[in-house]
Image (cartoon, rainbow, N blue to C red; front, side):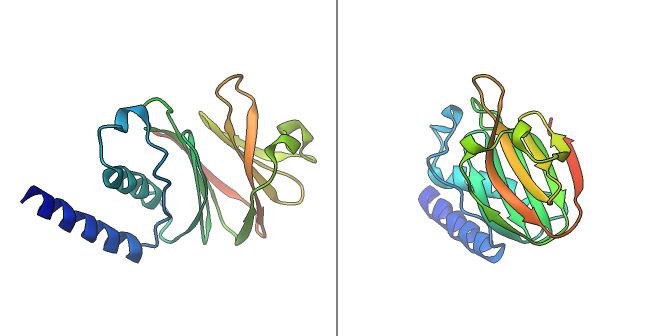
Length: 170
């Protein structure tokens, strides 16, 4: 009976997920505290986080996800969420709204905060940051755990001026 209920819930979650066009979250990103949980439950929790950002209704695709950062792009903006590595819980969120954009993954070794050409509008959170240069290119990064230096993981090009919202998640 329990397995029938679980199967029904998984099918319902899959259908709901498909309708919401949720980005798929990689199953290997299970935090130590989640080892006892099923992969399906973990998938559902991460997808729910991606879908529950305020002011966003249509996730386009997942730009990047690691143990400590989730970057999701939307029609009207981008959301970066930081995670506590040990517990897998969200710790902070940075959102950038407005504009259509393309995303490109690039070699993070070539980009440091100091190398940005006239970087403006630098927004930082507990463990994620966003910087905008004079060409309206957006650099999104997460903090390295060893020394706290920026490690950029994605570049986004906007065609409109940025508006930002920053919130710490308790």
